[in-house]
Amino acid sequence: MLAAITLLLLFQLAGEAIALFLSLPVPGPVIGMGLLFAALAWRGGPPPELRDTAQNLLQHLSLLFVPAGVGVMLHLQRMADEWLPIVSSLVASTFITIAVTALVLRILHRHAPEQRP
Amino acid sequence: MTPRLNEIWVYLSASPLLGLTLTLLAYQGAVWISKRCNGHPLANPVLLAVAALVTLLWATGTPYRTYFDGAQFVHFLLGPATVALAIPLYAQLGRLKRMAGPLLIALLAGSLTAAFSAVLIGKLLGASDATLFSLAPKSVTTPIAMGIAERLGGLPSLTAVLVILTGILGAVGAQWLYALMKCNDPAIRGFALGVASHGIGTARAFQISEQTGAFAALAMGLNGLLTAALLPWLMPALMRWLG
Image (cartoon, rainbow over all chains, first blue to last red; front, side, top):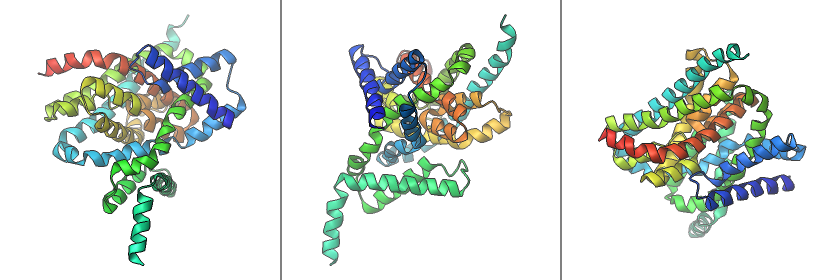
């Protein structure tokens, strides 16, 4: 487990370094995810230890959003002042986005197999 | 006796231990409730845990900064967890390759829809510019969204909250929307949820199935990259057009 966590942190660190060096607007962990994905593709899969550690970590992914979520208490005044546009925008936009993405994917995916030679 | 207890509380509430322990307790309580409700989407663990913690901090008059001193250790794990998403993603490599074209087009459509519909609706209902800039990246995972909001001239900490709320909304509502649309393909369900609701949608997708989760993770990562690349260019034009 220790080796696997070290590996994840190393990939994150490499991602952060690349983001800083190339002054990319993308955060380091996302670049780290890309790097790890490339490494897995090159190696042909994760070692069992890394797979188990990742599974344990991702099992509690929801927990990791709690501290940032509690930050809502800093913005209660603005939320109270602008609740109508904020709530409407979040609710409508989230569901429109899910619907548009799913529909586009469904239409394209349905037609994709027939177009192949 | 009471003054002594008071001293203990003052001492403990200022140490990181309390914020960290409370976060873990609130989350495990939330998971327990969520299980008791058979994983009902409304009993979302993030929603329950955040509500419980905000109520507690508010009732005890504890500032967010004091709480975050402890909770930051949990927050820090978001980085390695994001990196770890490469592993379930890799497990879907075969399907990803077959669907690459449709996935990329759906991603572009979803990414633009997420930002534009949020800004448009907010503007029509009279949101301030700072709120609009904070709303624009709301479908992107927290660290990217905060970076984008800062570039646009929004409030990063407000964005973090809007991102979390968006995630909870998607995680809570997607199931009903998919039933309405008669959408059963785990790849499509996961991908659309990941585009709209980033990591919290992804966490929800992993509850549904491993495959749904992997496609959500892919969508979340790609949407983060695409939105970070496009929004700083498109947003000024959109704001000019809206007046």
